[in-house]
Structure formats: C-alpha cells, structure tokens
Image (tube, rainbow, N blue to C red; front, side, top):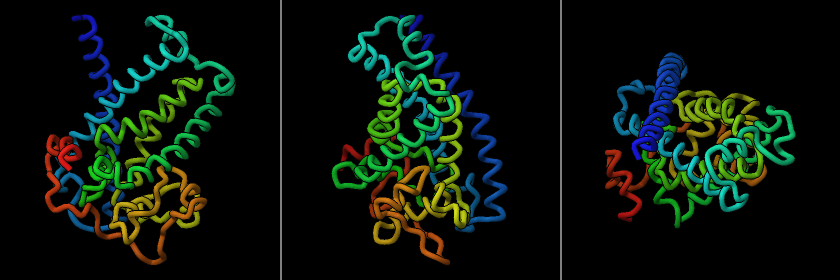
Length: 275
C-alpha cells in the first residue's frame, strides 16, 4: 500500500513540476503581449477576480486528468486486449501498436491532433446542450477571461471530452510518445485562445483558432456563444456552419447568465449537482 501511495505522489509531484515552469513562461509572455495588444483593456491577469480559483484549476485539473487517463488506459488494455501487469502494459503501450503505430511519429501526432480536434468539436457542441451545459457552464463562468482561464473545467467535462478522446486514440494504437509533442502544444494553444489579445490572425483565422475567435465563443449565446466550437482548427466551424467572426468588432463581455454562480473552486465543483 505504501509503495502504491509513494508512486502516486511521485507522479503527482512530477506533473506539478512540469506545470510550474510552463505557467511562469506563459504568465510572462501573455503579460507582455496583453500590455500592447489587449482585447479588453483593464486589470492584469494576476489581478483578475477569482485568480485563486483559476490557479486551483490550473494545477489540479491536469493532475486529475492524468490519473484518470492512466486508469482508463489500464482498464481499456485489460478489457479490450487482455493485457495485464505493469511490464505487459508498458510493452503494449510503449511505441503503440497496429497500423497506426507503423506511421512515423510526426504522422501519428498529426493524425491524433486532427482526429481529436474533430471529435472534441462535437463533444463541445454536446456540452452546450441542455443536458450537459451545467458541467460546461463552469468553463464559461469566468468574466475576466484570460489565458489562465483555459483550465477552468469541471472534471466531468474533462472526463467526457479530452480524456476520453485521448484514451480512445491511444487504444486505437497511436503511440503515447506523441504526447511529448502534443502535451505542451495543447497547453500553449489553449492558453493562447483564451488570452486577452485582440489578434484576429487575419486570413489565418480560417486555419488556426486565435484569441478573438475563441473569445467570441465565451460571449452570450445570442452573440457568439453558440459559435466557434473548434479548439484548434476553425475548419470544423466553417464546415458545419458555426463560424462567427464579425468584421471590425471585438468581444467585450463574458460569463454565464446565473447570478448565483459561486466563486470558489470547491463550490464550483458542486455546482452542477445542485442544479
């Protein structure tokens, strides 16, 4: 029992240590960029309301996601492929398996990125439906939207979304080694699209998601809140009629229509179950 607990603590510590330098770098970069190119001028990100709540999300949600992802991968290997034991699991997942693992690692990473973004586009649209909105409302609750708001997700939202999609693609045979590239990329792009920047990206707005594109998604539903569901590639919104980027206008108000929404991390964890 003590050995297992020690292993868990090692994984948790390693995860936090990875997050700290990335967080410092992102904080500095976006502080500088926002000084010159703020979409909504005002207080700095470290002065935003609920900064303590966002910091809790920033560190705890990736940690929880990692443990759940590992657990689902272990169960998937056991029930689908009858793989058991630590050594067998490591060998099974080490470099992937099947036709997908035969591709170069860069091709596996690109396949993972495109397929996961497509699947998450549809998961995102589902979360804007009545049945799942109470979980996704946590992400939209931030009124001072900035890069650190990117991790504000309820665990259910993360489980039935990013974690599930990751596990499905890894169980399909893609090597977990792609996460060495995609992990930092996903963190950086998620922070980027939530950053307080007035960047529309010009003609590239149809190629890659940018700050203004995604900040429109965080506005009220009758403005841009029912549009721009793609996380990385706006092509999905263009194909399915949900792209919204009005000319010569910037988003300026965020949050949800619930005046009783709590501010603390713990209360927000309970919020969906009280609705």
